[in-house]
Length: 339
Image (cartoon, rainbow, N blue to C red; front, side, top):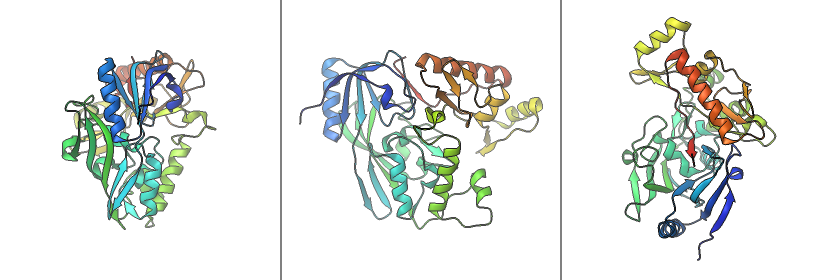
């Protein structure tokens, strides 16, 4: 089937921030052959390529992207016992809902996160004490270096906190086609995160209970996409929680007193939201057409007519404030495209 080649396609509607100029060329890949053919087209035309999923973790430039934007829309879920293979274009929360419905434990704490399945291994998506690295057994990819399909094991993916080879050392090499998750039939939900632990302190919740609780928490923070909620017009958590050693934690505590943190191996993870607020950027902070969500300090929002430049200006201001106050460099989570 011939490729559906579209030109000058608006990218803003394809992202949760609703920001960005047009793609010079746009294609939707609904099969593995589409991906291979699209890459061959880009090579012939001399086009740079950006792979777009659900648009939930990306900031597009106001000028757009002067190349091919290839959106992975490969659908389908195949189940074999406790193993599920999901196409990269499957809606992530629908997939989590399916797992919970079938009493398969391992993803319930990542309920309510927007985006596609294909984006989860790239960022090693995680929330409320879980991350996909805990359940991913393999990732099927198109390898742009050898123009072939390969299967990468969990170890091959190099998962660490919010990172993988897909967004670091091999960010322009692999295109995720499908992901295989190894779940636990009848397994207990994970409730180690403080909010969940307090909610279920005297009970034994089901997977459904935990999913509902996580979605409710995220909705109260405007972290569930809702057209009626302007605070949800964001890219989710904009900054990663910084990881520091014990000495650095003691230095910060000497400045501020008690500091909230989570143990992370031999180091600790400090909530970026706490650092941002202490640096003088509260919920509801406004800078022109950009702002901080009034329900969640980590979310930078489009207040209605923001440009990418507005988001960047607020990002820079927050980073500068935290750097000056604590000597910590906050690292953004979203991918910046076309800058």
